[in-house]
Image (tube, rainbow, N blue to C red; front, side, top):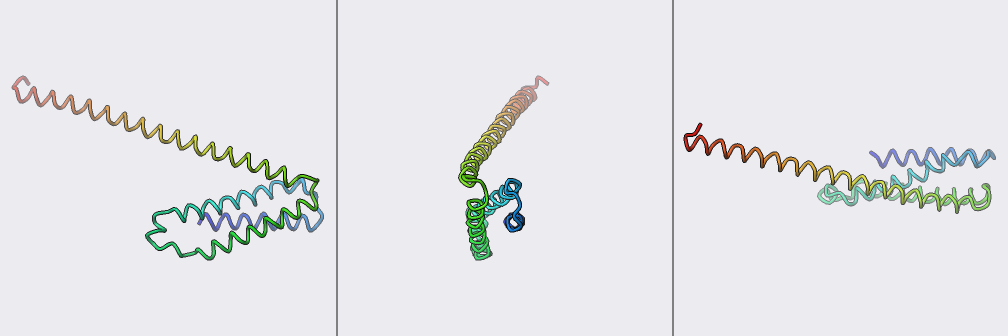
Length: 155
């Protein structure tokens, strides 16, 4: 479902950009729509990659919806090329190149944030495992002492 939502977001952002550029509107106000389009493009690519890597897809055969996903990615690629052309024609010089540089930096930051979140999650899991191990060890020791006392007749 995430793939369809991302495709819809990309299409909506593209239509806003194209309509605004067609009407001769100022390109500075389109940055948010361009950002939505490009982030939706990344979301579609990421969702398709997750689906390909899913063990459930491997079990089920993985061919359901492949053509539609391919067509959606091709459609987005074509729209991205059109947006690049529009930005190069109508925006101030170097806007697209600055946008690509900014997008690369943002991608690196998102990847670093994902890595930090994954490491924090792994650390929490490790702490829970250690806590569970300590609780089990203490409980086992107390029970062993109790049953030893009962067995020896001390209690």
